[in-house]
Image 1 (cartoon, rainbow, N blue to C red):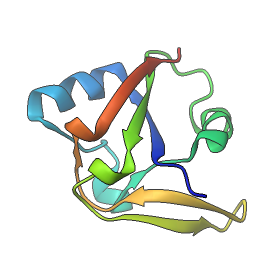
Image 2 (image 1 turned 135 degrees about the vertical axis):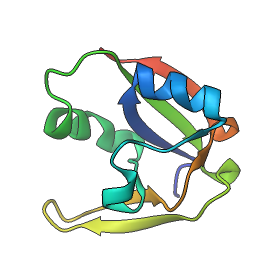
Image 3 (image 1 turned 90 degrees about the vertical axis):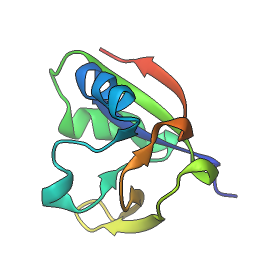
Image 4 (image 1 turned 90 degrees about the horizontal axis):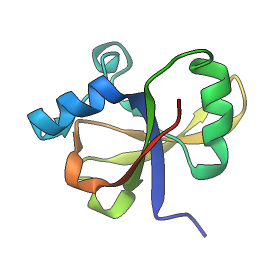
Length: 102
């Protein structure tokens, strides 16, 4: 059974800005076309691959059913795993927990 939660890693500063804007779009959204997310068991690997040595990071716990935009699970070919992607801005009321991770 699929989890009802997905996760996204961002900086504390980007999250603070999202609360002001009442929506979240990462800095790389225009280049990627979606918000990269993961399921719980994928979070550590994502941090190790993409955020090594970075500070002031937070993990957003997102309730999938509350996301106002499409959430699609798509294949990351380099590691042959499905990852959730949000196509559009993330409404901040879908974020149920914010955990500081560095």
